[in-house]
Amino acid sequence: MFFKVSKEGRHEWWLYLAGVFFVLMGYTLGQMPLKYALEAAASADPNLDESDVLAFASDPDFAKFGIDLNFGFFLLLLMFVGASIVLWILVVHFHRREWKTVITAKPKINFNKILFGFALWFGFGICSEIAMYAFNPEDYIFNLNWKSFVPLLIICLTLLPIQSSFEEVFFRGYLMQGIGRISRHKWVPLLISSLLFGLIHSANPEIEKFGFWIMQFYYMGAGLLLGLLVIMDDGLELALGFHAATNMYSALIIGYEGAAIQTETLFKTVEYNATLKLVVFLIFAVSYYLICARRYEWPSIKKIFDPIRLDYDETV
Image (tube, rainbow, N blue to C red; front, top):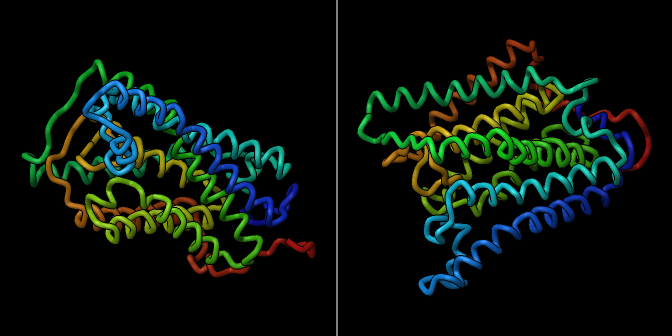
């Protein structure tokens, strides 16, 4: 059902290919304010040069450039605003489809599901952190600074959902539906979108800090789970809530050295065990799926191997 709505409007293969290109252009344009701020800071500081600007992607240290963390975070999120605007234009004006069709196959978006998905995954995060704190309280530093936390909270409530929503709509909505038009088997877009989701995060600083394979296992595993939620539920709502909770938790609650999101979180950890975090993620990911499957009465997981029936003979 989620793939079937892709037959609305224009759906030629080359439109999806052009769409990916234009989204990347929007993403690049959205980076311009950040790039300008970094270059301005580098030109004003004799200890910095162009190499420091180029190295920022693998070491997003705003303090090094004398940029306030909240302002830097704001600049970082603008690239997703640019990409989101381009994606909306593509879906509505080029593909000539309703925006909601890349989010859900149902008559309207279910915001209660988004909130449920958010609360469930955010709650799992809190529970896991409490357990880890009980065993290693010395690894946690309370870091509350109201002067910086309040602006951060505003940014997280306004711009951060745009970032997480863009990734979900682009990977689990636009791309999965586009690939599904060619493959006609649900597991193919699930697998390809998950691989792409992992590869697109290869530039994140966690890759260099904790190792390529362990972090790719996490990113691709997260992509598989999110894609699975979309296929089973015929919509992005649960995935949108999950992704927003993940990023909100990282930006507001727990921070660590080497994270892609560098903000003035409530707590800082001095020790980050990537392997343990991966194991905890897998346990909670399975739990998340099982709870959602029971709550929304999903059919067997074998649904991902069903063929995609577009129910018309037009060549894609």
